[in-house]
Image (cartoon, rainbow, N blue to C red; front, top):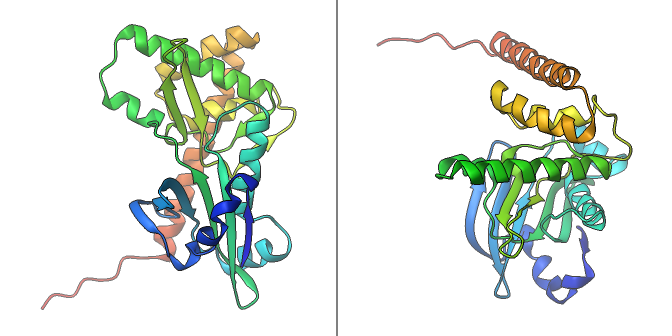
Amino acid sequence: MKIKIHKKHESIAAELKKIPNRQYKSIRTFRNKRNTVELADINGTTFVIKRYKVPNIFNRIAYTYFRKSKAQRAYEYALKIMRCGISTPFPVAYIETSRGGLFHTGYFISEYIPYPTLDTWREQKHSEEENKKLTEDFINFTIDLHEKGILPLDYNPGNIFYHKDEESGEYRFALTDINRAKFGRLSRYKDTMHSFEQLGLPTQELYRILEKYCKQRNLDIEASLFVVLYYRIKKRIKKMIKQKAKKQYNPKQPKFHE
């Protein structure tokens, strides 16, 4: 087992090493098709434990010899993003387990922040003024990311926490699920427009946000919209091809009646 613990949390190293054996108090569990996320109580403090899905044999070989695992990238990218002044749940540790000499399962442990994600905003009633304020602050946040050379590659509302600062009245944002990101100089259209495609907004709302973003960054709105729609269409075509291939290689079994 490989484990890296931030010096801030070295005092609970013994408890962290027990995580692969599930020797901790689970508070709540969330699952999707790929990964499992748990809120866990460790020594009276709530942490978030993300267990990544066991990769296929090719990626197991790659993570063993050639590439950093998702868990390691999540830990290192969190530190890198924080050094740039961008908020993200504080990285506590990452753990990698092996079987048969190959990488098997990765875990990323972070501190817990009690904020909702942007995908819950629409579930609540907000005034037009608050909607406008949140949108403006989110655009500024996105501009800040791009100008600092940070491009999250999973920039969807479910991966963005938000809360309103009581003193300033400004909305603040924090990124999660950041094992996929690009750092460095970003192209003004090709790179930055990926962020808007991933938000999954209706076209009219997308245009309103893009218009404000482009105005502040002195970009051409038509060119920006073209690039975003290009990425959106490309993504849909890829999804259609994947679904068609899946049906072709996994035909429905014939039904037998008694």
